[in-house]
Image (cartoon, rainbow, N blue to C red; front, side):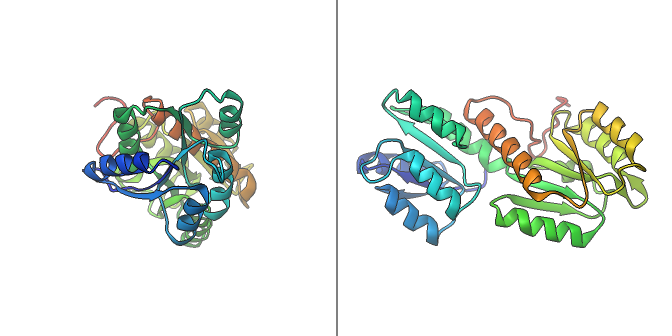
Length: 264
């Protein structure tokens, strides 16, 4: 069974929010209704959500402005727009500003439920580093920015456990009793397309290993001490791309629990 999601539904049409709330409740989720942008913001200040589903056109605050305000209240909170109008300019603006996507009314409920099912499975950034302090410090920072985080200080952890539910992996290249390249090879054998960012504080010493990592599809290499704004930009874009793929029904690059992307 998929984990329950807390979903904020925002629409000035109460019949719409009630219908969606009933459907999501039956599907095992926990919907919360809001009938205006201001109402949604007030709820977001006192409650945490996994996703927001909001109408574009509302009298007090449109969906794009609500997205901007929510990004300050709960950074990284995925927002999906709903519209019955072909407001192309405003929709493009919303996508440029980080909205996950736009659904046309009347909604395709099967598509919506499939998106939430995928969202509930793949939401974690995994840190693999044998320095517990680094894991905790970076993990706490990412959680404050709205990411879900897991970390492993033992590089010999079973690769299936390490990748379970992961959207992105941050992998240190210099580890006790092994090296990040060997761990990356194991990850690639299990999840060929899962985004892996390799990290090191040894630019020259690890140059050959870094080159080898890039040749087996490491997404990027970052150097310690990490430049946090650059890291956040990469993580945010990767997460947004993944969510957009899920909304379009494409197979995302994450590894789902018990799923080997090689098809094994």
